[in-house]
Image (cartoon, rainbow, N blue to C red):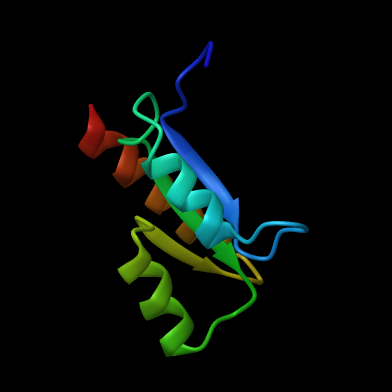
Length: 82
């Protein structure tokens, strides 16, 4: 990896591999395992959110995305990492 991201926005419903599988790969990659990962999903039921957070996502953002809330979450996460 040439550049280490500070934050990854990851859609849960991806073609070929879901976001939970991608998250596992991220967490098992020593270079980016500490990178914050936000789930982005249209699955907005309380159980969906709980499942995402329990899987290790730092935030679970539901669609339609509230931009100001997303920006606040990004800002807070990046400030905690500084």
